[in-house]
Length: 135
Image (cartoon, rainbow, N blue to C red):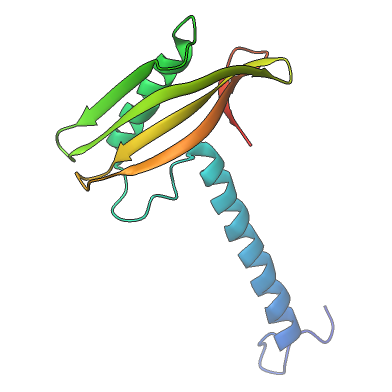
């Protein structure tokens, strides 16, 4: 690349800006991908431990697997070691795009910090039988 390095081998500012922009884009994409994996990542404060997350997602899997799906059905989880806990409750059952879906309120108390946080997520069963969050 002719003209992109100074005499001492340092990169010119335009090249640094492009490199910085590319790095920022990679970080943003990685953060976005992780947020899709864990929809509860936006919790402010200490947050949930890996074990808390495991317990949370196991309870969600139980709730999603319960048949028939009905409003009011709940699953709870708790981790005495971290003082974190939560309850997931189906608020509404419906179909969207040919998939069975339900709106779920997830109430999460991280590290015993009351009153906790509520998250409302729509979960839909894909044609392959897997439950995923929607939009």
